[in-house]
Picture 1 (tube, rainbow, N blue to C red):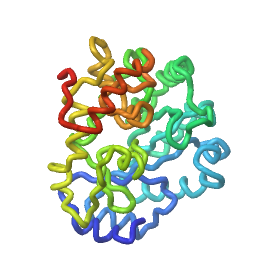
Picture 2 (cartoon, rainbow, N blue to C red):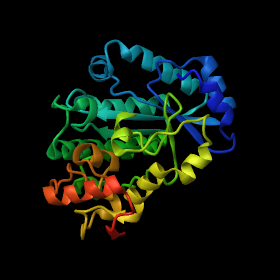
Picture 3 (cartoon, rainbow, N blue to C red):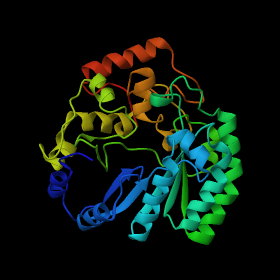
Picture 4 (cartoon, rainbow, N blue to C red):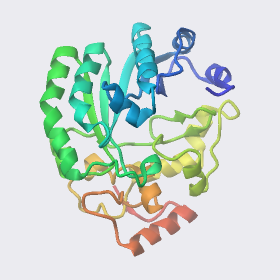
Length: 301
């Protein structure tokens, strides 16, 4: 935790919804009590498998026990818990059993996030192909209905690679980074998207990351140019390459941060789209607009 964590909490309004993303390993009864007193009612605790060896292969050696303790502690404290599962070749076989066990434990939701060949996973060959992802979706679809009926648990699916079967099988909501939520990082940095490499990705965009409690959270959200850029890229403009796509209302070009990490532009469809990457001249044009950033003349949504 940041040494200024308490100061950050003091500056946050108590009457707005707040949540904390964590791997659960540092949760303590005292910290949970502090979070509750400051208006936090939801924790997102990352755990990749209920099979210890598969979880540790993804999350790190001996992480299973610490994450499990934190998860159970938070549930006992009465928090609403969401569990994102990063699905890769390391843990794909245990996805159904993990969904079922998390539901039995009493979590509120489970999010299946397919690992992409970006960031920490570059070059490791962990990402599943579109056909493999489709197989996972077909496998878990009956289970999703079962756990929602028996336990009231919502299961969502997120893929940085947009592909038709994902949209046909699940009601996907596009990401509107910077529109209705902010992320406060461990050092107080306020950013619109948790998928962007921090802080290096934002540095490459050319925008300094402002921090709380040094600056007002409300002022950062409303007026910071970085947030305005993401609002334009994820909501107000149609990314290049998405013209005429029947899945655009679900996908909106894919994750904007992943588009930047892979294609170095926020204003093109993600290169991992099932339709393939854009031609180089189109990407280069959007990169120049990112650099200048004067609300590019892309197609309005």
